[in-house]
Amino acid sequence: MVRHEEWLDTGPVVRPYAVTGGRTQPKGAALELVALVATTRQGIAVARDLPPTMPPEWRDIAHLCQRLQSVAEISALLDLPLGVAQVLVADMAQAGLVSVQRPARPADRPSSALLRKVLDGLQRL
Image (cartoon, rainbow, N blue to C red; front, side, top):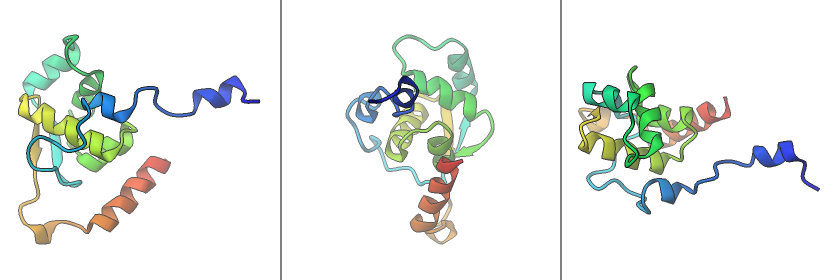
């Protein structure tokens, strides 16, 4: 028999694909895990008074990114699957709610395996 307390810790109630409208990839180019995200002035205003047509996760991202965050950090700190975080951030960037700074050169980027290990470690915190 499952106790009520155990049931509450089973994870998110809304499936990730519902948050992104069924998309698993951003509409444009995929965002790197190390891309840095900052909330714009417009994003701060939206975070204060989120219109009902916008996903509530946008408010969380806008609040979090008032301090510069990487896509991997957003995923870990908001307990969102990485693909969902990438789609939401890309949508917010397209709407002008966040700005995204991408790495300048491929050689400047850490390996994908290292970033996944960092993300796993952050999620365990």
